[in-house]
Amino acid sequence: MNRPMLTALLTIGLAQSLKVPIKKMQTDQWEWNTLFETGGMPSSHSAGVTALATYVALERGVSSVDFALSTVFGLIVMYDAQGIRRQTGELTIKVNEMNADLERMAGDSHAKQSEKRSVKLRERLGHQPEEVVGGALLGLITGGISYALTGRRKKKSFIF
Image (cartoon, rainbow, N blue to C red):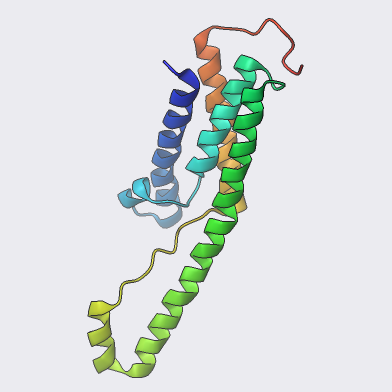
């Protein structure tokens, strides 16, 4: 069994599951579709890659190539989740607002007609920085717990 990969995948599932009750606290409504959407607190992207890097650090040490690879690729994923994908989501919000404004300016008869052919673009694509940090903290915890449950302990120094 590939314990580090399983840890990362289970952490992604846990992060996605936590989004539902967190959204309930924010909106006072159960929104089960949140389970299958991107964006939101905590970031499942950062949770998964941080869980993987944490497990690898504890198993192989921070000076290992495995840890270097998991950390560098993890940082790229987290940067992308809160940078490029978030910007895309914000741009999508503007496009949706412009479309609604155009429909209002065209009048009711045109608005009803364009409603049928107009599809609102998904706005929730990326993460706010605090959502990425929340996911990373979740990943640290689950990666550490998963490693502790293996019962193995490194004999050499953790740092070198």
